[in-house]
Image 1 (cartoon, helix red, strand yellow):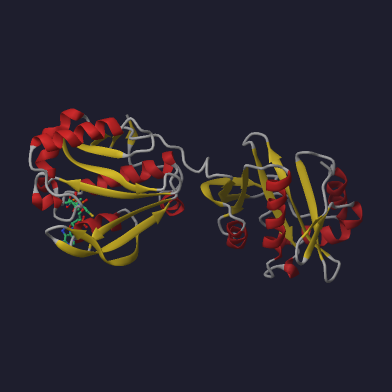
Image 2: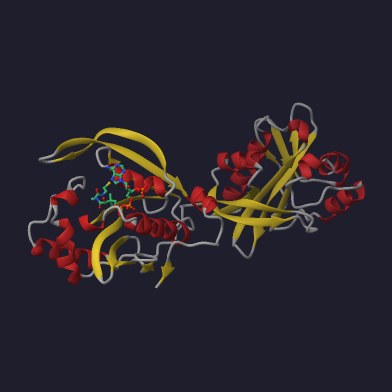
Length: 371
Ligand SMILES: CC(C)(COP(=O)(O)OP(=O)(O)OC[C@H]1O[C@@H](n2cnc3c(N)ncnc32)[C@H](O)[C@@H]1OP(=O)(O)O)[C@@H](O)C(=O)NCCC(=O)NCCS
């Protein structure tokens, strides 16, 4: 399709032409504008002309637009949407002359190009990336509905600079954001995290039958091994579902507790719950298990947000959340009610994938090994 003319409230987006060279050169030779772009700063207008001449306006893969400010008639920036065969997605990019920054023009232009890609190019995936320190561009992309996907790096075409970047993504119905993998076996320094089996009933009864362990949990203590056997059979069955996450925490061959996703929208976030038998408290075991699970859920499943909450009278659980690097998000008053126990306030904590991956660096250290 020939690159069309698009219009927004304050801008006309139209194909670029060689007559645009002086305007384009003015910003492409400006270090402040070119700094995070993949093109090296233009040293002469010949480079600009060469680029403008190379644009194929009838391409079905590249749509380059000049952004014209309606009130002044001036060309204030350019950008486009480009097909990426390797990722099977469209990529959006833009740059604006320095004097037009801070007026919402990049967002206005990017939103229109994205609308065009969705409506006319039937885009189901649109990506972009921005240097981590280029937070202004991050805000533009966020306002366009693109969300953090992973950290990566990019280089200028001539290799003169490398940037750590946030890859962001929009997908039509959220696919590509999460990749469910089910309750995989994870090994940590001391523990094996694995799906429950129906044969775990006795071990489950040991902690689930103890009122001290269940005091701040939603369920009443199990009354018999048969009750634990029923839940073990249910969990074994459930472990075959790839969007369910419920690990038995095994230490030296004994199941001493559990950690699971208690709530999730299946696409974006996951709420964790955990329990461990009394003799094992305060030995860092839940922190070790939870680090592995959070690492797995962010890296492998690609959830974007993980949260947990504890009764404010149960601070040890809150301490585990803190040791995971989670941030306090608020107290929900009288959020819990348990028959026979009354009510309690809930302190919520959460952590974002980008915070976790940033904190952990990229790939160096994992908190688990897949078995
Ligand atoms: C909450 C629970 C999972 C913690 O497991 P754990 O293996 O003992 O946790 P860790 O040893 O990794 O960490 C516990 C931390 O809490 C601290 N802690 C213990 N009692 C505490 C208290 N009364 N006040 C504040 N901190 C306390 C410990 O000192 C430790 O922190 P530290 O490493 O900084 O010293 C465990 O106590 C449990 O299973 N309780 C019953 C079920 C439950 O309440 N689940 C949570 C529901 S939200």
